[in-house]
Length: 372
Ligand code: PLP
Image 1 (cartoon, rainbow, N blue to C red):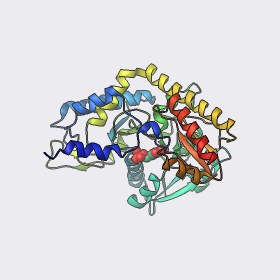
Image 2: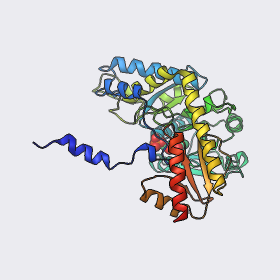
Image 3: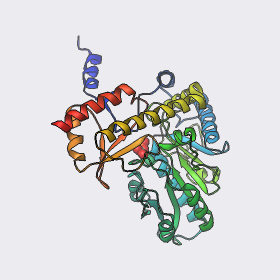
Image 4: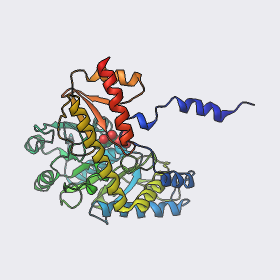
């Protein structure tokens, strides 16, 4: 008899396991996240009257994320990922500012290091995306941000954990600037949101800073939840309300989400991870990722590589003109890394699945690639 499961298994076996992946910001979900995911597999938060319990759980999770980000009253929801969260943050800022002031051609100012989701944002929302310069440490230059702001600016953004280098922009200075100029400040902490609060050195980046309007924080990255699970939180409900459309034939009267039908699995799995680990457990995982990052730096340095910046969080890039060649040869051997162009370097993301054994295996394969 034709067995569809064995067919599926064959396809799945072609995927590369996370234990050979140092390029992704996603990871193996915790076992508790998988259990929670299964329990909520048929839920649809697009129809919260039917899934009233799941909706209540989402509110509880948003409060927990708000507490983590120094504002238990923050409002928001769990979405498909950082891209959607960023789209919604900028859409809300544009709608609020456009209502308050007459804006002809809206623009936003983001760091040059901003994730490519901002390119999509420009296209979808019809907003001009202005890119501010970075300083020598690859943090956004606040003076450059200020110089790009004009009367049509509907928001500025800072990145707390850049995709390429894991760098943290000076969000405290951006917050002051946002207050001074009267523009919303969005913080993209898609990656850093579940790292920075647990690091030993404090980096102010969240609602503790008065100028921060909205934050992206993704449970399906360092939150170790199942995909899809992104998070968008607003300091003030008026921003969430600026996203509302009426939904005449559903159990709710309106929706502020981008997608209609949306899973409750991300809510359940993110909630399960946070409850199961607590802040203490989360900190242990972040500490271990930082320890593995330090180990990688040590091993790579002994091979003659130099990091682009001293790693701030669990992302590290090493300068080499041969970056593309190394990446391709490793991929041929079923190891996945990525590269950056400016400066030319290989990029490694040290997620919780990157254990000491993974680091050793990777270094040994890399040595063999360098000899070849
Ligand atoms: N923002 C940052 C800083 C990211 O690093 C990423 C993805 O890596 C995103 C946004 C987009 O997230 P997603 O791929 O979940 O849409």
